[in-house]
Image (cartoon, rainbow, N blue to C red; front, side, top):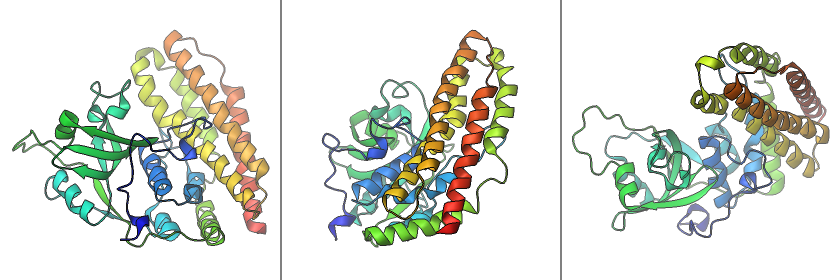
Length: 329
């Protein structure tokens, strides 16, 4: 098997994450699905920034920003990575062993309660659904090497047994987590010119899916109304709320800026001003995050409208600049 298709060299002690999860990022963790695929692409020696056009389709729904994820079609076009749903018709543990033999990782929902990399947040504290990519499983040693959030980690012993429910028998109420087979047999490393061309092709498509109006303005209406309800919700509610709202907007905006900078560096488009606009949104979303935390804890509602005006204007400028540049290209 081509070395590109093997991840057996990964070591949780020496693994260096993608720069997209580096300390220079304002939002180190984005969301569980995009994070693990950034790291998988990076670990294969490929360029994850080329896959970012999908972030521009971010939209605000009734009570949350869309959970931005790299479309499977994009991953196949850019890298030859083919993702198929895994029919979990037997224990996930057995599937993981089977697909390790073919060199195909498994992307699966998992319970953060048993993931030691979440120490300090959910590990042995909260049962929270998340996504991991299983890269290496040792049945005899009961160890698991996996991508999660911003890195590559290993778990063993009790965590291994509980994650795969090896100590549970005949639970008729159990519903298996959703899982996918990440097929790497056709994964290839394209030239910089080719990968940029494909990425631009994908960008043109995703720009046709951008919200027709300004989603930041819709988000403002929701937040201003939501501020009146914080007294009855509490700080625990705030953490869940902020993940679904401010974190998704901030992280996606930062990735949008990174993508604009990457395309500019390829010499194809001049997106310096667009990158600055998306970074403005990312920065101001951090400010909003802190202001909302203060509102939740003190119940003193501050005027958020000037902040939203700046974010909405930056979104309009950034999208306009990007769309105009692509049209001229």
